[in-house]
Length: 198
Image (cartoon, rainbow, N blue to C red):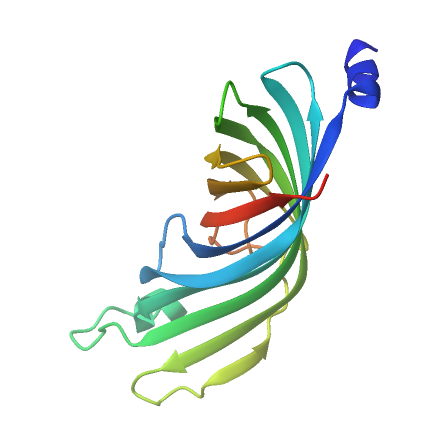
């Protein structure tokens, strides 16, 4: 009851957020990870709990790319290992998310720290599959069997430059497999600016 009372009556602020990000694969069991780049934009609100702590929910549109490269034929199909079984296949992913980060923020002065979790909804995903030897056909199109709802843990920090403008850095660790029955879990590093509108 005390928490809800605090959230209802404490003064809160709103901000617009925009930034760039890089996304990769936590543990590339097949081939190698190659980070891709993207961007995000959205809004946040800040509910003061006391003079240092606040609860900060956000809603963001996020465009992300990442790559699983240098996959060999054995890793792709389970074929026997031969001398010519060298890296040859690349998988390039392009993803659109709506994300809902929920963060606890600690800000004693201008420098702040934040941690929490995130729920993401996958709007669409595309895959481009290429064989450097051109023995397997190139595929480029919609990716099926993606987990629509994905969870991540978040940790970040930032600096409030003045009453309106702030900068921030955030790291996210994927807790959900990106594709059903496949090993990929993502990590994400983002950097951006926020501008308070109230």
